[in-house]
Image (cartoon, rainbow, N blue to C red):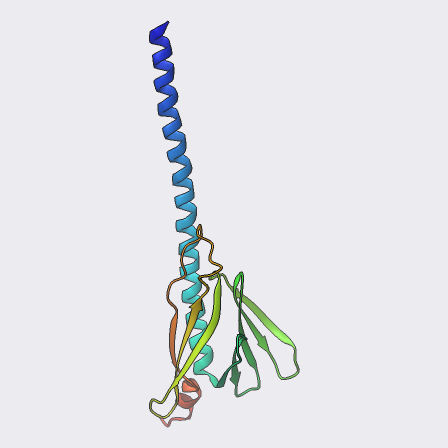
Length: 162
């Protein structure tokens, strides 16, 4: 009888350890998937923003507001940071919203834009400031975000003779 009690106690202990390890593994897998998704979204955002700046005429940034890229055709490409990530909205000259994209990058507080003279077109360095005060400790950290783009470079390339 005592031997049976010892076997049951040891098997219960082993089962408890296995179950707790299984839950930890599931949580770790969830965090890895979330981090991978956010990294892919950051890459997509940086590629889109760089492309928009290269075909834009001007970049406007208000205090704690959206980043707006103005194009030659009169479109406004608005990048707004929110709790769910960054929302890109294309607004035409007649104030209609053509497309709305969401980049699920996590919380970020504001945009930083530095204009640097370089060559014939101004060079822009765009970064995102992380929101450390409202960061959820269970969510993965936002990777550093930096985009270098020359304003209007695509339009300038089209005007060059072959």
